[in-house]
Length: 478
Image (cartoon, rainbow, N blue to C red; front, side):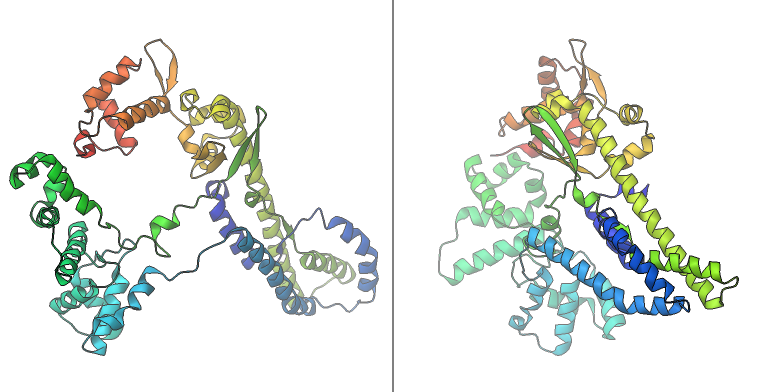
């Protein structure tokens, strides 16, 4: 059941762990090896006949010496093939980039450098320092036996905040933006260039009116500065040029790491016929090690010849049997996962055939887990595990499978429609609204009603929040 739940990317890691933990499990197709097995069967029998004094511990010793090399070769070959298919950029991580600049800070002592490194190590994946000075003081005491004050941490933090990219080490968004705009203003001063009124206002806005700016209370800002909306927009544009996430774009950055999705299924339209395939990484070729199978056979023959086995031979037999049984179980579990995933996704494909054929969200039918459970005969919990965190690649983009599940509602014509259809229309209405006068939830409710979807205002608000769309005031643009 756990194998059903994990996505393809995690499955690869799980298989890798099993291969490393169980030498009786190998990569490769058992079907392809059958002819080779038959051809070498007679030869193996001759060899076995010559080894009446066969010792299982000797065989284990030979295996331990010989097999890792061949296994490593196989694993290395697979890794090389994957590297050919998936190119990647080599670049330094965000923290490495910061450490490389420490020499520019002109720190007074080696201890200051240790403190600076500790601060840099505490900066998160967005470029922010969200730990309190007290926590860094404790870290330094335990890891380096250095006793420092909170103020010294703050003093060295001020130096770290001068590193590129600007905004690094800020404790919150306001400080991050202020660091950047201060640097811009100071650079203009150093170059004897004029600082525009818009930039002056932008700095004051961040210093004294950040709450009003972040909540888009533009009428208050217009009133305070006694300016037009056009002039206010110029100041806001200066702020929007700043980077709210200084660490973005560096290796190891969370936002960049999450942009790559490995689909579990692919649906291809072949002249009106939809073809579903499972990502081959979901169904890798695994087999039981020939070495271990031969050991089991040899032990069986030894057991027939001798009524009693030595203690070492018994221990070896138990070890080999456990590993072979575990390998057989894992191979069967992977096959079961493959069959169950294909069975579940095939049912989803048939249920939502019109959507996968056209990509039109309005053709998505209301579908709940029980619908697919009834079709496949699988338990609802199994269907849920298969659908959770899985993706399907279509000609309309890569989609999260669980997004195809939705409740039903009845429109004004008495037709049963999916709530996904309503959300899509709601999203389209907001997309086309006048951003200077965004629509309220009541306005959205009225427009949906005009299109034949009668729902309450609170339901509109719920759907809007599920779409991660803010309220009207926060959607306003100048």
